Image 1: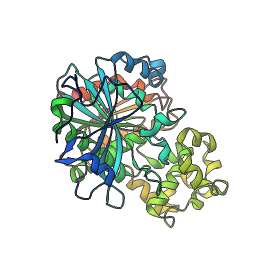
Image 2: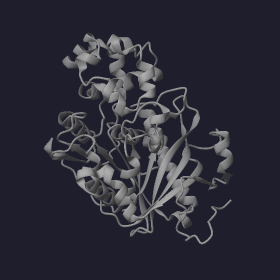
Image 3: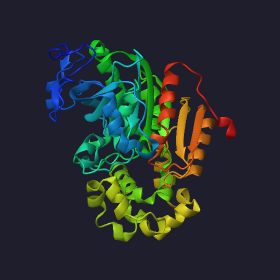
Length: 432
């Protein structure tokens, strides 16, 4: 089966860019010789390898001017990004491996440059920051919310409008009403990020005549939790997806150390506790030993129904108010390993990036970040350097956590193209 081309359609595109409508038109794409509409109806077949695309739908074409207009909400005071080309937006589903080891489907959003200046395009796999645990908070559904939690539909087209194919996958657990998102679970994040890369590579390889060619460069990055996901992918790549030749990593206010997050951003703790209790069991992660009693009766209901902006209003940004006295004391005194050894071991196991993968990394930090403090991010940079990575650590004056994305956009874009062009990765590891 070949990819259908609509009448009067220029051969560079897949879909129907002339049609701007809220109706998403499903397209049948040939992936490994299998019609994907049937796969989408049947679920993830165990015969399909991870990274297989099961369905793709064209959403819209954004002109360069429309990309800039839409970017206004995501870039704010940092001004609209420079853009060079239009962007086609798609929604797709691909196969990955779930926590229990069975194939599962994950939605993603794909942003494709239209006639970019560079004929061959690098691929940027982007992990979202915290949006919530429940299905309604998934990045793929942010357009249905009264206010987008991450505004990724406004931010990420700017990369594609500069010639970078960009894919944003949901995390495992979204689109599954039986369980919460696998929050800060390194293995799950790694599978999603790497299989998103494989999905994009398969899609472009099978449809290069209409999508254009990738140049083989893959950079993994993300904001906050998404930075955690990117570094998890680096750790797992050699064994899970060796065909994905990662060329570098980018973190925007990356939350690599969940132990530090429990201290510095305590209103995320209910999400961490709920998700870890589901994954590892309540006998190991007991919410009653961690969270103050007042939060327990509504914990599951709140964390599975409230997206992050609401959770930040409901739960306090104060370790003494959100935790039990014993847990707060252990965090404050650095005694978590001694007093909560099982939980501490899980938090250490889910601190990714230090396997010795050797990939270069760009860490973009805001000096006014109160979620990931400067000292924590500097410790991450130091440890990555010790593990053998060339790390460029940028601390931008006057920038808060959420502003690391627009503030670091130009640096990130340049970093991606430098990796594509084989430029020696910059490093300021000598500062440590």
